[in-house]
Image (cartoon, rainbow, N blue to C red):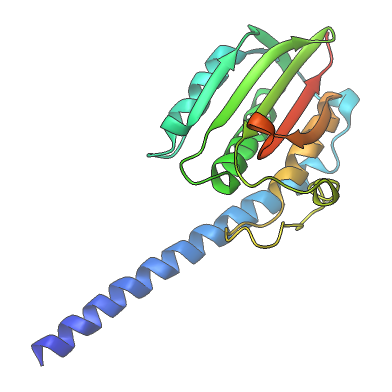
Length: 193
């Protein structure tokens, strides 16, 4: 009887772990849907921008990287400030880094770089994972689109959110090759002030 009871306890604990994972996934989905609902009616000319301290944002990004993933992340911030809405910029950066860590190669590299570009600022997030075909890159910002065969969970809303944030800032979002010609590279080109 004791063995059967222990087996039930282990089964219940395992079931609770699965339930917790599903609740976390549903919570993330609802948060993404709420973010899109808040962003949809926004107009670029009404967006209130502030001077954002980019090195501080990069440091916060590194600090918020999940345990065990920080060693994969290399940050290179060559720009002191950017005119942006701080909460939205943070959301875009977090989405891009989360995607690179999730869909990149296991144990692979992810770089985040901010450099002066064409009078503005280019922020690039690149990984060395399996990458995305050019045909699928064209669909990455479609709501709920996910590249098949990644083996990862997700809602397919993160890059839609990033695209909306880019539009609100007058920035250009582009997808290309990642590190060393492998993986995915995502660039956000913010205009100068």
